[in-house]
Amino acid sequence: MINPIVNLSKVADNYDTFLLGFNGVVTDGNGLIPNVAATLNSLHKNGKKVILLTNSAQRVAAIAGFFLKNGVSMNVFSCIMSAGEILHYKLNFLFEPGRFYK
Image 1 (cartoon, rainbow, N blue to C red):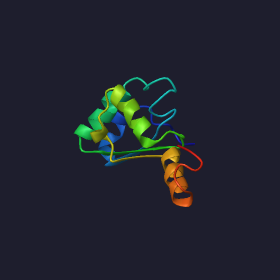
Image 2 (image 1 turned 180 degrees about the horizontal axis):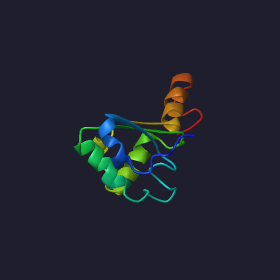
Image 3 (image 1 turned 90 degrees about the horizontal axis):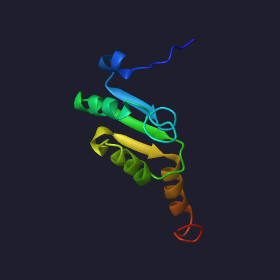
Image 4 (image 1 turned 180 degrees about the vertical axis):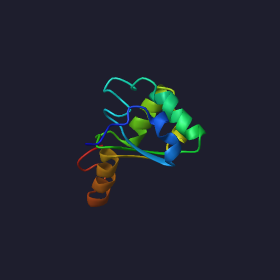
């Protein structure tokens, strides 16, 4: 059985890159989970790379706005990618822009 990591500070020194999910990992659906902003800022301050992946339909700009509103700079993240962003670019590639969506 895998034991969950409840506090990243206990393992942060062992890794240089952190791959995190959005819903249920850094957010609870209403806002940031307590201490997430401080943890993300600390990881960045200590030279760690943070990659955020989500299956959310939101585009990256909306996710970035959420973090900025909650006191987390975009400098914290090496990359943010969402299913919504991938879908947007895929639709732009396959179809004439504006034909099916705005």
